[in-house]
Every structure is written in C-alpha cells, then in structure tokens.
Image (tube, rainbow, N blue to C red; front, side, top):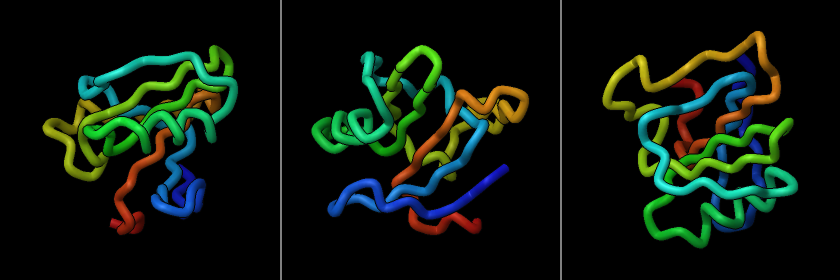
Length: 96
C-alpha cells in the first residue's frame, strides 16, 4: 500500500493511501471530476476529517474520522486489486 504525503491544498496536508477506502464513516457523497475537487469539498465541510475518492465513478466520499483512528479495523478496506480507490486522511503521521 502506497503511503505518501500529498499537499493537495495549502490549509490541509493529506496522506494518500492508494488502493484503500475507509467505510462506515461517510458523512457526504458527491460527484467530483477529480480528487482536488473532492479535497475542496472536504475543506468546506466542518466535520470532514478524511475522504475516499473513486476515480472510475468520480465519487467523493467525505468521512468524519481520521483513518488512523478507526472505530473498527473492518472499517478500513484494503482494495489493492482496485487502484480506482484512494483514501486521503488529514492525519500527518502517515508512517504510523
């Protein structure tokens, strides 16, 4: 699983987890043309802490938790066989 820091905005540094998706914490779903638009939606939502982006369907899912603070390990799905999924978290400590 690829974990790298990606500064997608000036006010929020996000950690990218390619091929992964956080579930059971989605607070809003929108259709966005690209991940930067999805990040913008997250920045504008007061409760957004992380996001999932599904490139093939242009779906943006905003989450209300930081992915490293999941309630249950089953909430975090490793989807390595499907690189269309990407998860971004506002957690700075990506190496944890």
